[in-house]
Image 1 (cartoon, helix red, strand yellow):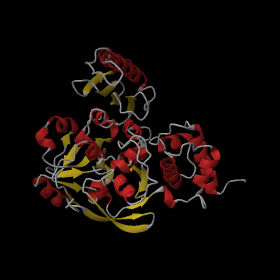
Image 2 (cartoon, chains in turn blue, green):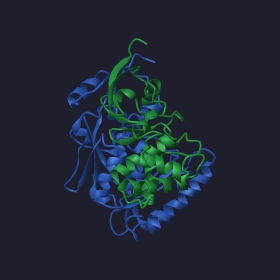
Image 3 (cartoon, helix red, strand yellow):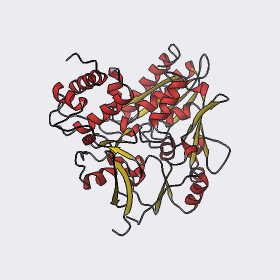
Image 4 (tube, helix red, strand yellow):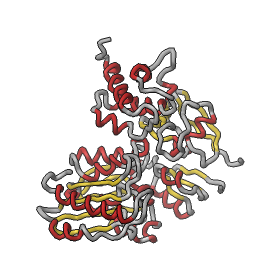
Length: 255
Length: 161
């Protein structure tokens, strides 16, 4: 174990300086505790007021990156009851963890079992980084290592119109991490944007008319074996649940 | 250890300074300082036996790096009451048969307390969601949910007893 230091910045200027010195950001810390704490220093983001702000403007919901899942779910639910984003955040992990996991930390770590990544990708969400004024699509942030390390996430920006739809997570028991998640975002009468997390190749985003997506639902990529279940079983289950969610989302806008 | 931190938290209403290594979790700091009512179960944030209330919300103390709780307000189950003067939730758990081996009970009671502080009349679904991070291997969950409902009634003063 290194001689780790702790820092408690009050401003993003201080954060940038700490990042330049190679220190790591601490949001809720749940991912850091589970992974190696092999770093010279951590800086805690909970004392920067700007990172806990939220609001709606011009059709976009803005959530500060230090908001916890619990707080973000409450904000989203108050804006749009029954939306898939708040459903996903409310069903992730367990209450004491949801009270601790932050949006920014969760997107940065992007574990395979995340309940947040699928809904963000399906809703075409973006993130603003401390290193740039221009938001980056979450899909770009996840695929571009250089971008991920250029600054901390300060804000998550979600198009308000894109969070109506359905969400499903597959677990063996409620408090398990999901082996896959399916998000269906409604964009019009029959236009949908979907994301399936869990395939071995990474999250799959599918966009199109409901009828087209129903056809592609039976040809998903491969899944790895997880716990006691084979990859074939998980894939078949994902196909069945995808078809089910496609069929029920829209009849009832918020399944 | 030469780089131990000296940080203050308020635990159960009393501000104290604790000395601990930078990578220590809140669970180990609390237990090492005598708060053994905070139980050490899975150490992976899954069982809920180490739940404490930090700044008004429940957290798994095994998943919180102690340094990040600096200046925070922490409640353990000891703050609510004791065997001579139990909190209505503690009494309801005992009377409802929601306690068997008791290992998970401090976490269950703190989760119930946090819920009832925020929502005095929770629905069954809200109770299940608030306690979904507390695993009990003895009772099943029916008695625990009954105990939370009984606590809600008593804390509102609606009890006919």
